[in-house]
Length: 206
Image 1 (cartoon, rainbow, N blue to C red):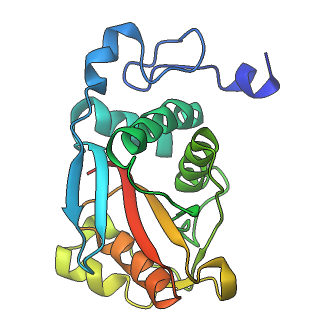
Image 2: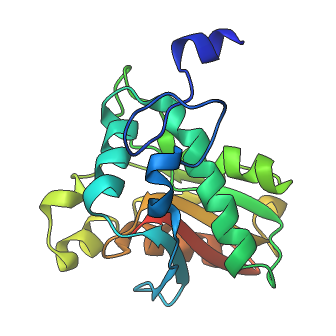
C-alpha cells in the first residue's frame, strides 16, 4: 500500500464505500455505470461527448470530488472516461490530451481536478497529456450566470500554447462538467486558432 492509498483509500464515488482496489463503482452501484453517451455541439461548433447527466448520485459524486476531500475519485472517474473513449471514439485518434485550465483563484485546499482526470485518463489510454491552455484573468463563477452571460464571461479568458505544441495536433480536450458549453467552447476555439488539426471535447457530466 502506498502513502497515497493510506490517505486516500479506494472508494466507490457513488456511495463512498471502500472497494477492493480501484473500480468504477462498487457492486451495489454497478447499475449507475450503464453509460448512454451524450453528444452535443458546443457554441463554436466543436463536438463534445459526456457520460452522465448532472443529477442525483452523479452530481453528488462530482461535488464530493471537487469540494469535499474525495480526491481519490479521480481514479474511478478516469476508468469511466477511458471506457467512454474506447466505446464511442474508437474510430478517432488523438495526438494529445489536454484540459480546461484551473481557475486563477483556486485555493490551497483545492486541486486541479480536471488536469487530474485528463492526465489519469491519458495514462490509461497510452496517450500523452500536455497542458496547452492558460487562463489570462480571474473570471466570475459560471454557475450564477445565464447562458448568454457565460459566453461573455469567457471571451478572451484563455490562451493556447504556441508553436508545435498545438499546430497540426488532433486534441482531446477535457472538462469535468459541461452545461452550456461556454468554457469548453472558448478553450477549443483558442486551440483551433492556434493551429490545431482538430479538437474534440469530453466531460464526465452534462
